Length: 104
Image 1 (tube, rainbow, N blue to C red):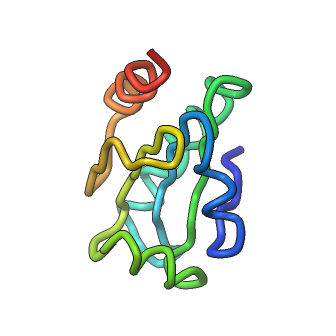
Image 2: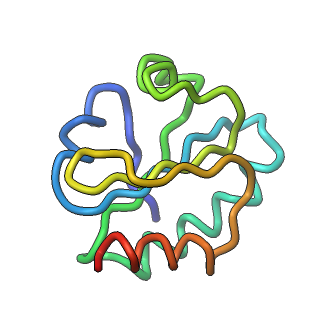
């Protein structure tokens, strides 16, 4: 299961290592398709990368900080720096490729 990311724990979560965050909302249809893929990645990359989900309705500050206008949006961070951004549903293969590259 993906980690729950909030405005309160966001900075601490992304500051070191590789982190993938799915910006989503419960009412978003495409987000419901992306969610299980993100959960699979969380299990597959446990101990290697952090995989989390941020509910944009409950955490507007972080969503606003990164200009998230459409969901699902996926951001990938390495040691606190954003290295990749996707808008719309992404395949497991695409996201694995980005995580593997960031883990290098």
